[in-house]
Length: 246
Image (cartoon, rainbow, N blue to C red; front, top):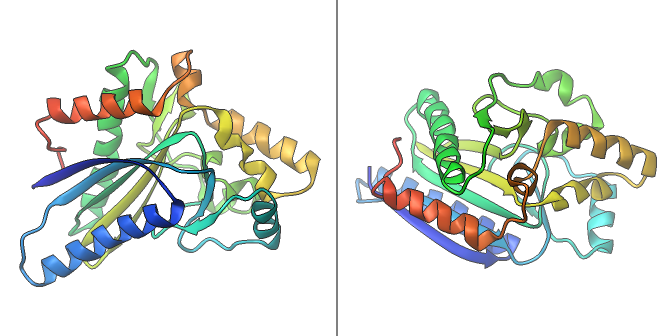
């Protein structure tokens, strides 16, 4: 499988989502017409804090008002999953052919294996994979479930037993589009200020998210810069000769 790797820097939420979905659509068209194509692995940041919602997630009036008052754009991801506040983080997008759900599950596992190798190369310790998936039927009945980092899925990357990366997939027209977020500091926790206006609920939700998730600076014990993590990912990609085992 041919791959293209891109570190595209910091773009707006709208630009990021358009770019990712366009890559998936372009691959789908190429496949239908028996044209050459390459799979894509892109890492990027956000030019300002932005809230993204999963493809089918319902947006509340509170979220709309709170984001507007704090000048935080809202974008809709073409993938599934729950809300993510993209602030100081590194995001990835994977676009590749997908002929079955086994292929999608394998991609989910292998991309987290890749990130584990990249982070271990710069000394991050106590990394592992989530061994099971949250019972989402029960979890989605809770208000805190609106936030992606309130729960884990099997094979997601964890550190010290807590979720470190959140990822979501969508398969359409024989193409897999997968997104993932790696928070570099605790700014992702500010999502609670967008989900509810009740301060007690904010505190409760924040504690719940903290108990289930973590960020890279907590795992490394030091501040983490986007450029440093992007370089580690690029170096790991080169060491694998530009090819993910998918």
